[in-house]
Image (cartoon, rainbow, N blue to C red; front, side, top):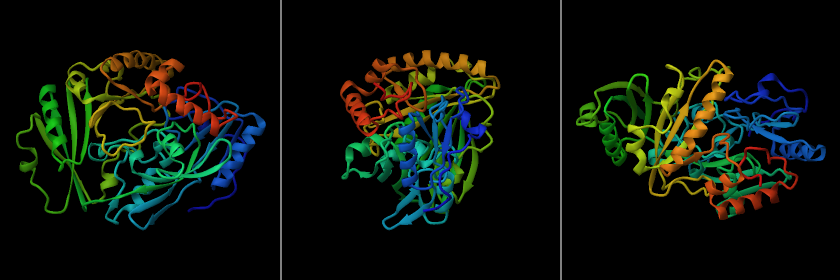
Length: 430
C-alpha cells in the first residue's frame, strides 16, 4: 500500500468546512491525515482523550454535513490509498482510494469492479459505508455485496479484520453502516471478468407506459448490463442510457433496439474502458454550488406509478440544473443487513439531485424533499441514506426495524464507548 508522512493535527483547510452538499458548514478544531491503520487508531484515541466529536472524510461526497464537524476532529482518509491485485481476482485497496484510481489501475486487465457509482471521486470506504449502486446494479446489486474482507479501526482505537466468517457482526455493520462503526482502512473486493468493449445508446421517451414496458424488457435481457434512467421534467421526456458490454463485432443496433417504444435512439459511445465510459464528467456538478439531494429505494411494483406521477414534484429542480432518475437493482448480490431495501428479487432507486447557486434556495428544496419522503414511504419505499433524512429515533427504528436497529445500536455503543461517532442525524445514536 502507499505510504505518506505521519498524520498531522494542524489547522483546517477551508475545504474541510463543508461537504459536497454545501448546506452544513463547520470548521474542525483538528485534522488528522493518517497513512496507516495505526495512525487512525492514534487519531481516535486522541479525540477520545480530548472529548472531541469525530467526522470521517474521504471525498466529502455527502449531502448534509456527515463529513463536517464543528470544533471536533476530522479524520481525512486521503492518504489511505493504494491498489493491489491479488490472486483469485481479488483487489486489495485502501479505504481512502478514490474509485477513479481503482478504475484506472484495472484498465487493460480484463477485470472490473462489479458495480461503480456515477462519479470517479468518491472513495472506496465512503461508498461501502453507504451501500454503493449504479448502472451495473441491474446485474450485480450493490458494492457492499462484493466485499470479501475489511480492515477496520473502531472508534475505540481497536484494529479489526472482519469478513463473513471472522467477526461477521462487525462486517455486517460496517457495510452500509454510515461510518458509525469505524474507519475502513483497507478492503478486499471481488472483481469480475469483463469483455473488452462497452457500447452505449441513449433512448428518448415521451410515453411513460412505453418506457416502463421497455424497462421490464431490458431488465430481463442479460445483454443489457448497464441501465440508467434520467427524468427530464422540463422537456417532458426521459432519457434511458443503455450499455452493452461485448467482444467485437458485437450485436447490431437493429438487433438491440428493434421493437423498443422510444421516440428516438442515438448511438452515444463505444469504448475499451468499461469503468471510465459510464462516469459523469467531473465538472458536471461544480463543488461551489449547493446540492440538497435525496435517494430512495422503491419496490418494483411502484415503477409505473412513479414514472406517471413522481412523488417528488420535479419542479424542485431548477431549469436544466441538477438530475433526477433511477437505477434498477437486482437483490441477488446484496447481503449487507444494514442496507435497508424493499423486499423482492429486484427494486429500483429514485434520486433527486437539485443544484442551486444560493444556499437559501437549497434549504427550501431540502424541506420539500423531506415532505416527499413520506409519500415515497406510502409507496413501500425507503430511504437510501446518503446523508441527513430528518428522521428522529423512532423513525430510524421504523426504517431498520426494531430488532435490527437495536442490534446495531448495541454494537455501535460497544465499539464506540465514548460516542465519538454518535452525532445528530445519524442512525445509531439512541
